Length: 632
Image (tube, rainbow, N blue to C red; front, side, top):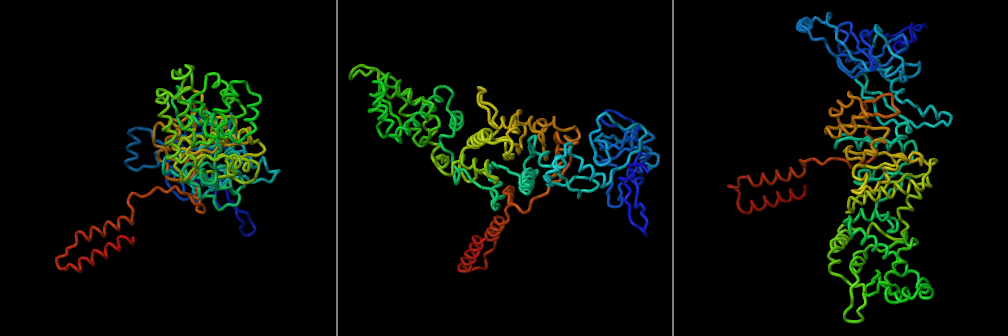
C-alpha cells in the first residue's frame, strides 16, 4: 500500500479486525498527459468520472473548476488545483456529445501545481514535479483539511510551541466545493507581520471581515489600536474591560502644541504664497504671547537684560495683557528685536489659544509705512492691501472654528490629551479605540489624527510591545505628498519601518487605487472581497494570479480571497459573521416599511368615497386616520 492510500483509507474496528472503509479508487479521474513549470494537463478516463456525485461525506463536482486534486508521482504526492476543463473541438467529439456517448469522451483538465506532501503537511514543491502518466485523484475532505493546515509557509504556532502560545485565528471557513464546513485558521503573526489590508466594494463584507479578525485578536489577547472615522466600530468593544473607548472632541483632545506646522497647513489649506507664512508666523506669535502672559518673571528679565530696542517694545507691545501680539505702531528695529524672541525654538512646543488665530492674522496684516503726521519714521501699520490678501484665510479659519467646532477638538493642558491616552496604551495592557463619530470635524482632521498617532507610536513604541494599528477606510487619509512633494504621511513610514518598532498595520479600503502605491506595495497580506472596477482590480493585480483575478467580480457577500507572502497560494474563504458584537455598517433600505404604511393610509383616505358620510363622520374619519399616521 503506497503513502497516498493513507490519505484516503479510513480504517474502522470490525470484530477485532481493522478493515478499510473506502479507498482512493472512488476519487480517481485520470492521468497526467502534459507537464510544464506551472503544472500540467490531465487526460481523464472518460466523461463518466466527471459526473457530480456524493462519495461518503464528500460532494464531488469534477466537471467544474477550482477543486483540489492529488497526483501520485514518482517524486512524491503532489497537490494541485483544476483551473480549466475542456474537450477538443472536432466532429467526432461533437457527435459523441450529441449522442451522449460519455464513454468515448475524454475531457482534458488543466492543473496548477500547489505543493508536495511531506507526510504531515503540503510544502512548496521547489524543483520537484509530477510526471507524465502519474495518476490523479480528487482531493477528499481529509486532504483538504491537510491543505488548510499547510497553507501557512511559516507556521509560527509550531515555532512558538515551546512557549505554549496558541495564536491561531479562526475567522473563516474554506470556501470549498467538496466541503464548506472546514475551518480556516492562520496565526496572528502570519496574517499581520507583513501588514494586512482588507479590500472590497461597498456591501461586499469588508467590515464584517475586519470585525471578525479584530474579534479573534481580542480573544487571543492581542493588543490593537482602532482608528474609526465613521463610527462603525464604536460599540463593538465598548463593553470590554480591556479596551479603552475614546471619541475625539468628547473625551479625547489635542493640545495645540502637539501639531506641526505642516499639520496646521493641512487643516486650513492656505495658499502657498504669502498665506502659509502668515499662518505659521501668527501661530508662533500666539504661542509666544501665551507664554508671556503666563510668566511674569519673563517680562522682568527682558526689562533688565534686553537691548534698548527690545526694552522699548516690552512696555508697548509685549507686556500688555492682550490675547494676541499686536505690533502695530512699532519701528523696524523693535519688530526685529521682538521677532528674535518669538522665533526661539523654546516656544515651538508651547500651546496657544486657537480662537485668537484670526485676530492675530488680522493685526499682522500690516506693513511699514512712513508716518507723515508725526516724525516721518517707518512704522508697522495696518495695510488694506495686505489685509485683502489675508482676508480669505481669516474668514476660512473663523468658519472652521465655528462650523466645524474645532475648539471642541483642541484643549490645552487637558488630562484627556491624546498623548496621555497613547502613553497609557503603549505602556499598559489594554487596547484602544479612537473614534471621530458624532462631530463636524473636516476630513483633514482624520489625516492629522493618523499622522500624529503614527509619529507618536514610531517615536515611543518598541518591538517588545507588538501592536496592531487598525485604520478603517485608509484611502481617505493615506496622503503621499503634496504638490511640492514635501509632506509624507507617517502611515508610509509605518508601512516601511513599523515592523522593527513592533507596529503592524491592519487597513481597510474600498478603493485600492487611492491608497498610495508605497503603502500598498508594503502590504504582505491581502484579504480581497468583491471588486468590479477595472482600475481597482488593476491596482492589486500584482498580488494575485489570473484565476483569482477573474473570480473577484463574482464573489458573493462575505466571500473573499486571502493572499500573502506567508501563504502557499491564494485561498478562497467564507468569513464568519461575529453576531456577539455590534457593528454600525447596515446599508439603509430605500423602501422604508413604516413610511410606506403611512403613505398607504393617506392614499386610502384621499381616494375613499365619502358620498354616504356626513360632515361629522368625515371629520372623525380624518382625525382617526391622522392619529394612526402619527402613531406609526
